[in-house]
Length: 255
Image (tube, rainbow, N blue to C red):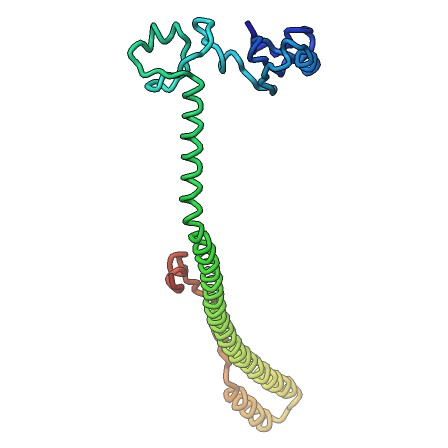
């Protein structure tokens, strides 16, 4: 009997046996098949061809090494004559060729019916396509709206940032002017005090007591009029950063 697993030509025993003769129950290579069909006695034999043929499964019962001659309608299986007696005795059996034609007709009807039903709903595809295009257009509109809202929020944030920076710079300008003013006043007072110091030094050469007392009195009067400048507290600047959770940002947007 043919051994489908070997897939070797059973005539020349050297080439792949991709052709199965249904009448001879043998595997043939392409060359041996041609020779077989040229022989007068076997020219009408029929072949199953292909690299994946499995005649043992298709045509024979593995258990009893017999041809499948019946088809069990209850088990939906091909059976040999021994299987029919042993395992399918009370089942509804029919000849395998008749069953094959019946199954082929049934499958053909099922396929045609399915295609007909699908074709009757073919207009739904157009509706689905239209709905898909509409949905995608809506998605693009929503994306645009989200981006516009994001830009608007960013503009407001940028405006707020610039406002804070301008306020800080204005305060900085005022503080710098104030500090510079204090510095100038301090320098002026120091210059006046040094001037009186020089006048005092000049009095060391005055011998006239009356004149000296008068001069010292003038220096003391001028010194008393010089106001001592208090060094101001240096201004400091800090930024109290506010922590904003990601969820809070999400609340600024729509859904």
